[in-house]
Amino acid sequence: MQIIKAPYILTPDKIIKDSQIAFEKRVVEIGKNLEEKYPKATVTEYKECAVMPGFCNPHLHLEFSANRATLSYGDFLIWLRSVIAHRESLVPKCDRECLQNSVKEIIKSGTTTIGAISSFGEDLETLVRAPLNVAYFSEIIGSNPAAADVLYSDFLERFYRAKKYESERFKSCVAVHSPYSVHYILAKKALEVAKKHDALTSTHFMESRAEREWLDRGEGDFKDFFKEFLNQSAPANRPMEFLQLFEGLKTLFVHAVWANEEELEIISRQKAFVIHCPVSNRLLGNGVLDLDRLKRFDIPYSLATDGLSSNYSLNMFEELKAALFIHPQKPIVPFAKELIVKSTSFATDMGFNSGILKEGMDADMQVVEIPQDLSVEEEIYLHIILHTTRPKSVYLKGVKYE
Image (cartoon, rainbow, N blue to C red; front, side):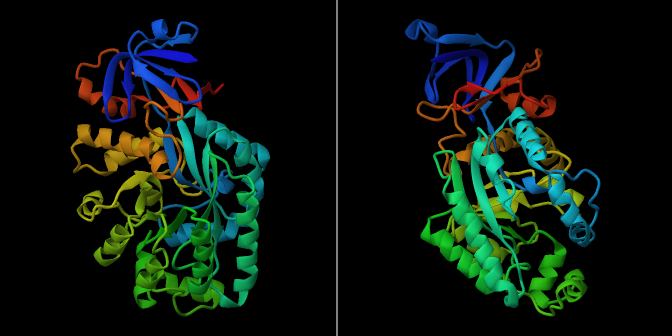
């Protein structure tokens, strides 16, 4: 048994002042004078700090973690062409040490749950051994029907290899890359596997204007791209047909910047989620997700960093700062609270016993420093975002991460 004493405990949407949290692997109790109730517990006192849940980063690509300045930014097609030009050298550069260092940085920056999109399976061993919660998305990609059997076979091998390691903190999940890059039949077969195993699913959806124009009319920047690289003259899917494949599944639709209202209606009806990646959207020139429109359709969202292929950091505090400033119309104090609540409690939405500090939940926590001169208690969420780069301490299932 351990007890942490702190000026603030965030649960995450409620501020508890001058209290204590008792925990083992899971939270036992939050209250006052707990050291009297549990006299054998180890007590740690943090001054001028808040205890809050660890972050959930539901969408990242660890296999591209070797990138710093190899890939080009500013426009989605320019970036995509640079990925194709350099992926054969970039992916091998992120060896086991690179992957392990990325996981360490993720945890040290306060994240205790991730959704890892894996295209090749090279990150499986590292993530199976990592101490955080992992939703491991084996990704399928390929719009050429002639290669469908080989691609599907490779996907199945990776999915079932990951499934052997399933536990309370590791889940084997399914990712369909996107409607423009996966043939309809291939997507349908992969999602049938997800339905069979009740697996969480993920897909990039309507990330760019180029995707919108290509899927709607077979025109735009993608027209020359698909002709050049795949000798393909027509889209692999129509948006509405693609969306209907996810009926009955729990799905994370990533980006959705260019989704139209008819598509959002389907996403809402499916009780799916949208994952917002503000830094990635900015770097690739894709625009800003309309959060108010999501609210009108009653679509829940959360934040993610995407991978280092389209971000400079996997630190969720950096992503929260970006979101805070990229949505200037949002009232800043309540919006800061909204961002923290959604970026922590989403671990529960992904099926883990984590993301909220209350009795019976896993003790996945971070301790963050609070400015000494905080004068308005309700602004604590805003100042956590503004003044934190890394937490003071991180606990995973009650164990302090060193």
